[in-house]
Each structure stands twice: as structure tokens, then as C-alpha cells.
Amino acid sequence: MRADWRAAADQVHERLDGRDPSGQSWWSMTDDSDAPVPDPDALWRPPPDEAEGGPDDAPRLGEPVVYVEPPPRTDRRVVAFVTLPGLITEEHDIFRTILGHLPGIEPLNVGHRLGPVAGPGGARDVEATFDQVTDPDIVVVPGALGTRQMARDPALRRWLHDVAPRCRWIAASSTGSVVLAAAGLLNGHPAATHWLAGDLLAEFGSDIANQRLNVDAERVITATGSSTAFEAAYLVIQRELGDAEASRVRELVGSQIEDAPAAETHRGRRILRRRTG
Image (cartoon, rainbow, N blue to C red):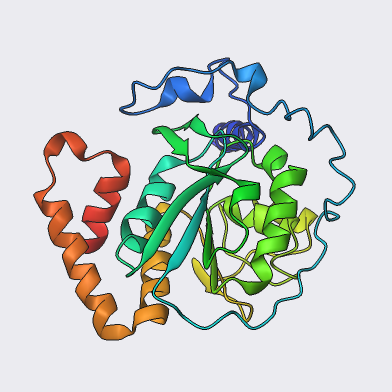
């Protein structure tokens, strides 16, 4: 039994590193997407200006961010969702569905290049590049396969390090917490993460939090996975709009999910239905 458990754990670690031990690409395991399967060897090949080691102005791994007072609330809220190859789309979709009820929201999937990127569950379009989004109000980092490479991506680390100090909220789910630690956004504080990503989190100076949903003093919310991503998104709604509006949005989303066609109930929707039911 122990050997079986160890074999399963090794497979998850390989997927965190961006490999599937069966030899299949990650995207051959998707649920309900017609997205084309990209060349797995090119998935984490860095763009020409992001060779190994990164640009000279990339922050050192884990270099702490110095947070400042966020700007006052306005009627416009730019919410940036980090969207890179290997994205766990169910986590992305849960955050985007719930946070989509913030008034004045301008949701943007951000990444290296415009266009679709694929991950377990399908493909999502990058709507803006990192250099086009310089002052988001909220940043969301969903989990992804290939976490080790993602955490060492110099352009991503630089962008997070630059935009985080004035963000109102920063949220991450599952292995996205490792990326926050690598970019220095956790400042050594514990974080919730995927239970098998603890070693990666420790590499960048943070421990696994005891809670499945963790909020630190620096406006950073971390969650262990899809179910707690739901609660993390609602926490942002509650902190931004208050208890009454958060309850109203929760009820509204629950009714929308119940009315959704059966064909649209991919795993992310099933989680949302379970959590609102």
C-alpha cells in the first residue's frame, strides 16, 4: 500500500514539474475542450528576451516585496488573472466567475503573449501582456502544472514584484502560492497550497499554513485548491463590498449555476454548484 502511495505522489511531483510520467502531454487529459494540443517540448521554452537567468532587472528569487498603502477605492477595478501554459482552468474560472460580480470590474487574463494557452480543463485566452497591465487592483494566480518553471519565470516574477505593492488584494490557489513566494510576495509568511507543493514553497522561504484558506497581514489570500478558491473569491467580495453584498452575490451565483445547462457543468461548475448548494 505504501509503495502505491509513493508512486502516486511521485507522479504528482512530476506533474508539478511539468511532466506526465505516462508520456502524454498534460492536455490529453482535459475534460471537455476542443483546444489544440500544443507541442509539450515548447510549453516552457522561454521567449527570446527571457533566456535562462532572465533580464538584469528581474528580482532575485524570493526577494521581499515592500507593500505600500493601496490607492482609494474607485468605480473601476482591474482584476488580472495570471494565465500561462498549464493553467488549472477550474481554479481560474471559479475566481473569474465570483469576482466578475464586483462593480466596475475589468477582468484581464495576463500572460507573455496574446492568444490561447492550454491546461487541464481546456484553453483560456490571454487578453493582455504583462507590460500592458501595470496597475491592477487585484491579482489572481491560479494553480498550474509546471510550477517549478513558472516560479522561476523571470518576467512573471518581475511583473508580480512590480504590481503587488499597491494591489488591494492578491489571491492564489493551490500551486499558485509557490509563485507568490518565488516573487517575494509572501515575505516569509505561511501560505495555503497544494499539499504536495510544500517542498517547493519552502525553497522560497515560506511554510504551509495550517488553514486551507489563509490571509496574511499583507492583503495576500492563499487557498489549497479549487474548493477553497471559491471561498477565497468570496472573501475578496466580502472585504470589498461588505457582508450583505457578499451574501447577495453568493445567492446570485448559486442560482445561476443551478440554471446552467447540463452541458456546461465541467468540474469547476460542479465545484461551484456543490459549494453553493
